[in-house]
Length: 164
Ligand code: HEM
View 1 (spheres, helix red, strand yellow):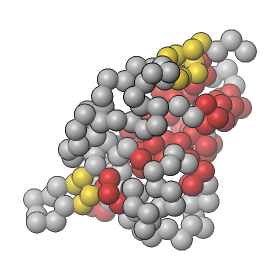
View 2 (view 1 turned 180 degrees about the vertical axis):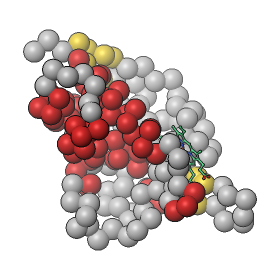
View 3 (view 1 turned 135 degrees about the vertical axis):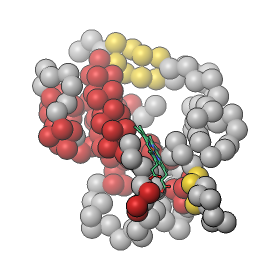
View 4 (view 1 turned 45 degrees about the vertical axis):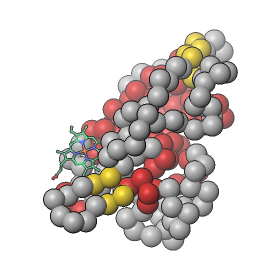
């Protein structure tokens, strides 16, 4: 559950938001590290793993997101890989969580805002971990694989209230 990542994201949230619970749009732009965490999570586990337009062509988002051709250590969770996004030489269309072009996801920004608001509220108060015997210790295990990655095998999380 990457406690170091949680700590870093929480420090940023407390620094940018202070006592405010819900980030404004401007504050959401300032949450640079949290945005990298969200982006990396959506790379490793794109909720829509495949685009199947009504043509003979399908786009394997999951495959592109996990390809060593485009990503260094593709199976590792490394939010920092998005640090210098603009200087990076990574090929276009390699992060395709919301698709791209004229049919790009209409809910793209809505979904990102929800994720930021939810994570700001959660990380401020809780540290999240997995039970010691969880099957998800090494990576998230899915029930079966289809075009939406929604079938996660039963996932129990521990929310420990922060005291400091
Ligand atoms: C993390 C959450 C979401 C992901 C990963 C996601 C992903 C996608 C993807 C991959 C497409 C296909 C893009 C293409 O064909 O090139 C799409 C289309 C679409 N999404 Fe999302 N989506 C998310 C949330 C939402 C939400 C919250 C809404 C609505 C409030 C939404 C509304 C739509 C619509 C209307 C389209 C069709 C756009 C079109 O064909 O012109 N999505 N989404």
